[in-house]
Image (cartoon, rainbow, N blue to C red):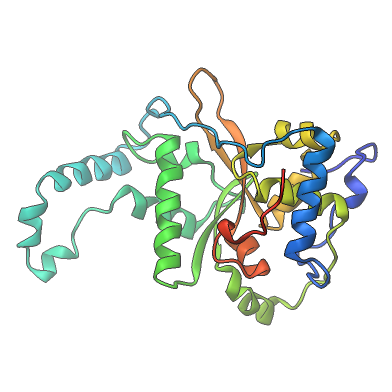
Amino acid sequence: MTTTPDDPDAADAPAEDDLDWDGISLEELGEAYAEAIARSGDSRSTTTAQNEAETASQPPAGDEVAAITEESDRQADTASAANESSPAEAHDAIPTPGAIIEAALFIGNPENRGMSDRELASLMRDVTAADVNDYVDRLNEAYQANRQALRIHRDEDGFRMGVAPDLEIVRRAFHGKIRETRLSQAAIEVLSLVAYQPGVTAERVQEQRGKESASLLSQLVRRRLLELRRREVEGVKRPVATYYPTERFLNLFGLESLDDLPQVED
């Protein structure tokens, strides 16, 4: 998102991709959250994430990819027979929806932009945008559990294939180190509100801060400290945008999970 001159928080947004984390501590993050909550008069320390609901099935795309996923469903019904196949036959197995998503993101968009959940869902028959988000979560969990180098990143353009946070050093070895910049106090405050309330909406963050926060949320998403997830909510026509801390956030703060954040009194 491009900020405009009249955006009150635009000057607070970091201008580069990498951040100087000297002086940014967990205590500072917790204090920023406590102050924001105190100003808003909100006694709750967490916000319940948006309920997910299945979207209507996407219209089928090309017959070739649709046929692949249809055949994949039939193979799932005959798994026991597949287990008796020879090694050579195993190589001919029909790819799963997760594998198709992984392949599409590995190849990438010709226009060098992210791919949306609906765009990926359209490649397969009987797979919804909500299903795509679930598959991406499972893929990332598998990458992390197996200590693989790949990660699927979410930003405002959609999904992109990238590397794990602890392997950013490899990218820098090829592309050089980007000039570092510190997070502003306003950015730390927004980051803390999401860290302590995973699944919070932009409207909720703005309500708690009392200030426009969309530009800062966008900047933090671009820097992969936060990720944007669009969730289907019953009774709401369009998917609701919610924000979550990323694996990179945990890595930079040395956390195993969000449960390790400092406890903050209401």
